[in-house]
Length: 211
Image (cartoon, rainbow, N blue to C red):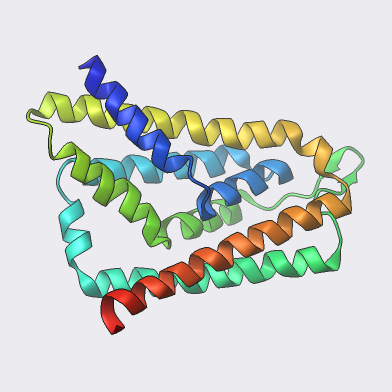
């Protein structure tokens, strides 16, 4: 069972660590000190739901439903283009979002943080590909329900460690990112990443359903 748990941990961490929209978002919220506990918790709970769905047999339903796949892909592309635009706008304004006033940073509400985290997570089809399809596909090779339970425990442990480490690690480093020039570079890179992922989603639609 330990080997199966470690297998789940390895597969999950290799997928989660890849640079993507969700990780960039968590990193940014950590730097801004914006409700990072709730951001990390929502990311983990989404992984918990989607990984369990994948391991226990629902992945094939989502991957086989073209209407759902197209809808999620278009919604994700629109969301990422919008988020990328906001990052570019912040970059070109040249103002640091980490400006400190009397030792405190400007913060948004918990509800706003949760809503944005749900959007960046659930409107990205790559999340379903990683958690439901790939992890679900790997778990198909497991014979017993106990092995699947050990496997999904490993995947969730990786998710738990990664998101809280990323969020709170960035929070600790936020003092080094208060200069406007540094934040301009961060915002610009996030904008490029968001738009690149959005374009890749549209390219996926083109290759799968148009060409």
